[in-house]
Length: 73
Image 1 (spheres, rainbow, N blue to C red):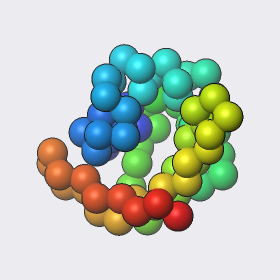
Image 2 (tube, helix red, strand yellow):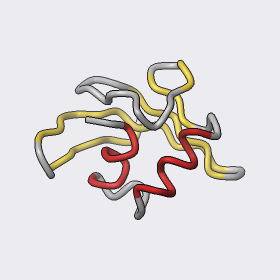
Image 3 (tube, helix red, strand yellow):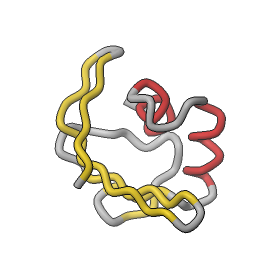
Image 4 (cartoon, rainbow, N blue to C red):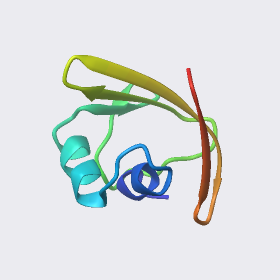
């Protein structure tokens, strides 16, 4: 699943366009590598998201269709 769509469906970010902008600014890493909005997110990936002064680290537990599960690492 595309990164921007995953962030929206999992309700980490409310709008897909905002998720795309954040990813394209280089503020999201997947497994330590800077990600673009079109990168695929797979089960087991670790996402690092930088929101201003706050950094969130999330681990993708599973995703299928509209249902996504993640844990804060």
